[in-house]
Amino acid sequence: MSTTDHRRLVARSLDVITGNQDAGGGYPASPAYPVYGFSWFRDGSFIAEAASRAGAPGSATAFHDWCARMVTDRADRVLRVVAAHRGGGRPADRDYLPTRFTLDGRDPDVAGWGEFQTDGYGTWLWSLTAHLERHGLDPAPYRDAVALVVDYLAVTWDLPCNDWWEESGDERHVSTLGAIQGGLAAAARAGLADPEAVGPVLADAGNLVAEEGTLRGRLTKWLGNDAVDASLVACLTPFAVTDPYGRVAARTLAAVERDLLEPGGGVHRYLDDVFYGGGQWPVLAGLLGWHHARTGRTAAARRQLDWIAAQATPDGLLPEQAVDARLLHPEQLAPWEERWGPVATPLLWSHAMYVILADALGIHPTGPTHHP
Image 1 (cartoon, rainbow, N blue to C red):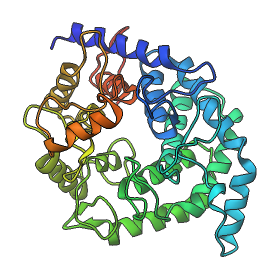
Image 2: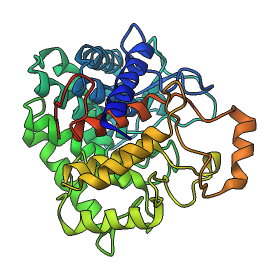
Image 3: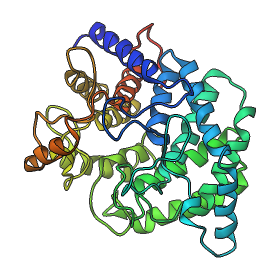
């Protein structure tokens, strides 16, 4: 695919992102899918990163303002969670922050969907910090919310919770720990968090991953497990909790590419994935390509960019996953389509990861701006 065509799809992706952003600042995960009308801190933080990098910083600022409101509006809950844990107890389940919110700022009300999930809060700290530094913005409006999130993560970081995929809530996930480490470290570097306050968490989380989340020299899906999950690439890029050129990174990347990467491009989530049959996710192709771009593997990064673009509908919309190619469990496609309809399209996070990867490769709708 030509650079010109990529520029057009980047521009289209930015239109999808900004055109679907709520007036209050939240990004719906997918405006047309039955259960994705909420705004996730995780999805939204990557979406905001794309907007911040590629010419729509006002959109990113609006999202970060919205996130800060979501947290400060629940300050009393955060304080109860922190006080309970520091006192050796456990707060009421309703006091933990949800993983997603309605666009008008309420907690979601969807039966049977667990909400305790901490990766999004770490990801938000990372995304906010990158945005403020990139555009030289005043951090003062965010200090109260950041302080609450830092305190919240300091007492919840090692608790079992849902992973990136809203699954396996009884486990402690390495990609979740990576998001928390990346966010806390970024906030400390930027002066938004006290390094002495976050230092013990960073050290303890790093030690825990090294002792229980690393097997045969590579990261694992969760602690005490040997499975591979493509979200682990985020521990390398962007969260950089391990040396991107080091042994652990190399072995983690090799395992992801061996088990989950398709020869023509596209990345599965994990081998047991049955959601819509277990297709290939543009989000993960973008994540893998971003790491390749960061580490100088430009041709490999470009293959992922081309693959993502090839998944776009004729009107330039990117899906949550590709289900017309190889599925890990094809017998599971029809049951999900009967339950919730076709795969979510557009998925704003897919558009965001495409934009980020294009930008990392110097492809931008208004010029060769490069933010590796």
